[in-house]
Image (cartoon, rainbow, N blue to C red; front, side, top):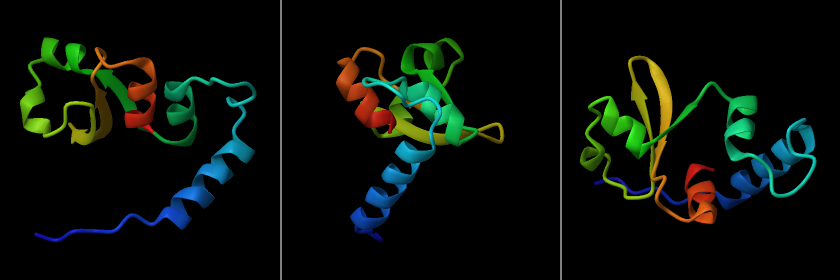
Length: 92
């Protein structure tokens, strides 16, 4: 199994770049889904909604959130039952 170390310097630089360039982030707290839409083509969908469309949540391997490709689109599925802070952290 291949393991990767997180590149914290790169993450820090990218987070600062998003903060500076974003037209969405002008107050805190900010809308995570709006920022995700502003910087990418990634869709956001709750586990509950995924279940309604017969997506196997247990196959994700995470109880918080997961980024996956579905029908050619990237989607972040998140657990809507977590605390708001946890959801935001997991999605970002």
